[in-house]
Amino acid sequence: MPNLKVDIVTAERVVFSEDGVDRLIVPGIEGELGVLPLHAPLLTTIKPGVLRVIKGEEETTMAITGGFIEVRENRVTILADAAERGEDIDAARAEEARRRAEERLASREGTIDMVQAEMDLKRALIRLKALEQTRRRRRGGSPPPS
Image (cartoon, rainbow, N blue to C red):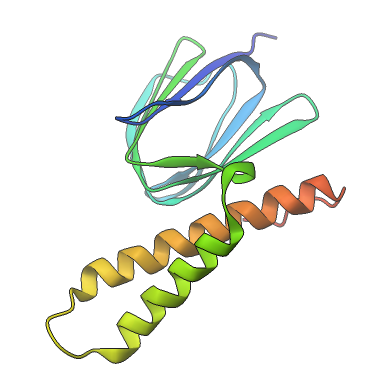
């Protein structure tokens, strides 16, 4: 059976680029989207969440803040607003970002941009979830159901 060629890019850099990928699990706008070899052509948006790339026994988890996915002829291209591998996430920074966003939302005073605070909180929570899934896999546990 053929495998997938996967490229995940942001405006700043290539986050992931590999051949031989067995499957992807992407946070689609209507739920999780699984992509296997021989998938029908597809172009759709993705929402913020945790993206998983499975290649053999290896799984790469990423925090992604949305973007687009194109699937065509066993080639998957994801144009992400932002993406970060789970192993690259600084736990202390992500936890601090979560705490700050929660404080801003709780204060509800002044001219604070509540929409931005909600987006910041969601991003911090996604980053922490990706980090936790990466750590769990390294300890030998199975990833939690998404």
